[in-house]
Image (cartoon, rainbow, N blue to C red; front, side):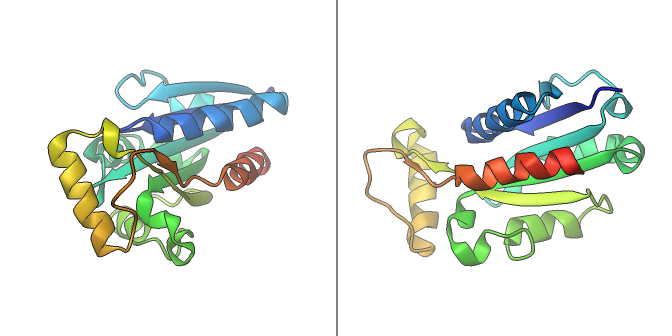
Length: 175
């Protein structure tokens, strides 16, 4: 049976989708089939996939509640399928917060669920003040100031480590 990887994402500003597309590229280049879904559009059965991956971004300290609802709704299928999870957040730009065991959002997320995927990772996201609404820009600048991040930039800053994304993609194939 050909290995098919299902990838579901929840993205606010598009970085999680961009990471998912990079994962798709690596997996397909390795000769495997992928199917990519927005969390709002998933109508399939998880059990049809060899591996099922969920990617979710953080906004204001939380993953989209639809991610938790999805996991609760599909918990039995997820537990009976090889599964993986990754979070995308700006806190992960700091080396000491770039591992799932040290990232506060990932820790909080898994403390609130009994689902334990076989593979978990966290990637730093992208900061783009120009694309945010006025309120989001002010709130994110405040958060960045509190966490010693950049607050004065007219250009987007991509903190994502694409080599780590590639390594995660390779781990997916061996899960």
